[in-house]
Length: 101
Image (cartoon, rainbow, N blue to C red; front, side, top):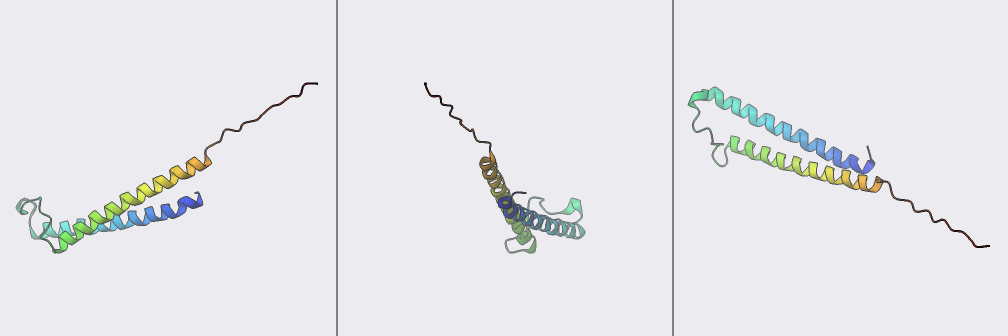
């Protein structure tokens, strides 16, 4: 991998791992909710918790991690395009001249 891309790739990996961890915490919290409320008795499926609640905080952290992941991916793709442009084959122009004798 190109050295310029390495930093962006590491950022992308860290962002992805953080997103997966946030997603795991939200899924775990949902499972905990299902233990308290059976699936058919969960109050309004669209609710994500009251402001300041643990579940709302986890949900917001996951949304933030997703935003950072998308941003890191865009930065990585931009770096890839820069490297590709730099490495693009250039058109060499050869001038051929002659002299009249």
